[in-house]
Length: 246
Image 1 (cartoon, rainbow, N blue to C red):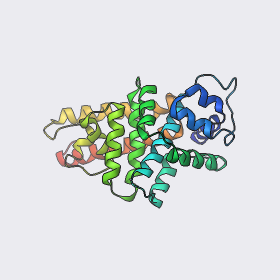
Image 2 (cartoon, rainbow, N blue to C red):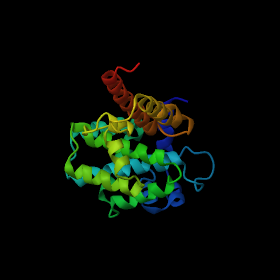
Image 3 (cartoon, helix red, strand yellow):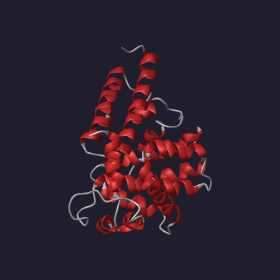
Image 4 (tube, rainbow, N blue to C red):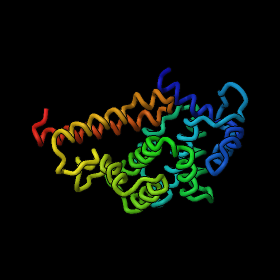
């Protein structure tokens, strides 16, 4: 099955209040709010357990919408970045835009959406890291991470259970930090060559896009993992060049 087909399937699943009722909480309310704007393509009763890819994508859209609202200005570059991260079939675009607009207007704060994702994916923190990566990609689309966006991302990261070191490691893949590129790999500059190589191998194995595909995650998660792996490899290449590693 192609990634495009998977993406179409995710947005097809977002059709009906049944999924909203099954998921519950603020994300479930959003899904229910767009009922009738997506076609339900899931085989069987709609009131079964909400698929994880639907929860992931709905949560990413909701948090992106709240982030856009946090600084009061939505730039064209951010809209373009959103389109790259959240890939949508033309037939589903109107519904996704409605989902985004509903999330911006809801009285629920971003904390409620972030907490629901943290609870849902508490057993798989890599998915929560995927969400943060996607948000960073959108926030940094204009070439800078603004103060309001940084505060927002730090707050989401904390709700997800990431400490300061983890936040800086994730941020280093998207914005320049003093310890970059070592921060991208989660290493101190004093790490020896063997530790650098071992850390790089471990991160490649952990974050390879094939893992997202194997878990049946949506195109959004695979695209995020692909960009993350590119950042990890670029950081290692810089360190290797500085140290003369082969």
